[in-house]
Length: 253
Image (cartoon, rainbow, N blue to C red; front, side, top):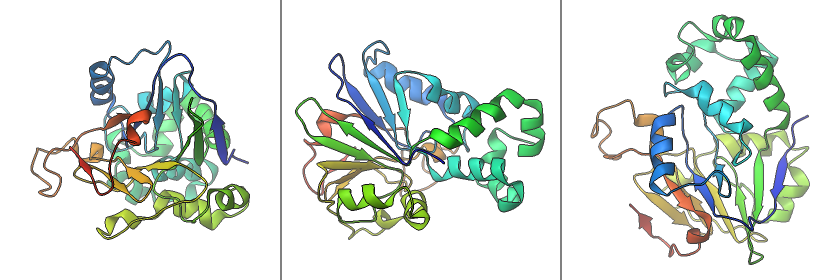
């Protein structure tokens, strides 16, 4: 049984950051961290999931979960991996390879994990403990909730009560795409801010008390302008304290 929610105490020594979908792109992530002078001794990085697939360094990105400064919720791409490890017949492998798996498992997962048994063992262990949600406490008492795509309820306490037993709720949290609707806004009571990825947006966007930060790591293998609505795909990293400074309807370039 996976741990549905991880609560993380406030960072009293350094800064906390959130990062959008990484999708196997380790070097662009490192460039982001260098730009913010990220100090692994005191700072922490919280990922909205989708560490793997599409980019060339998925294995290394998955192994970031071993680092004491790195925290991640599971995304739909991690869940596909976990489902395949538990039951290969439950996953359409051809679709998985077409939607990003081939970038790091060229000959498919069966061949790849036969040659990487240690990684398979680690991924199986990660499937049991990788949270669906992180609740991050801040030094001023506010709290930030992190999940992959959305919080599909109106009250944070309701989420806490249902998360461990409601599989449909968990699946919605990694697959739903409500922010694709330009009119979508959602306020979740009982939590100060939520942070999500999953849906590629041209800029970081605040909708209600949710901030959406997937700005296109999945597109980094393509030439700029290939997807006109996402002219400059990138990995976005924001300091958690600055999330509260984003005004309603603001688009952060």
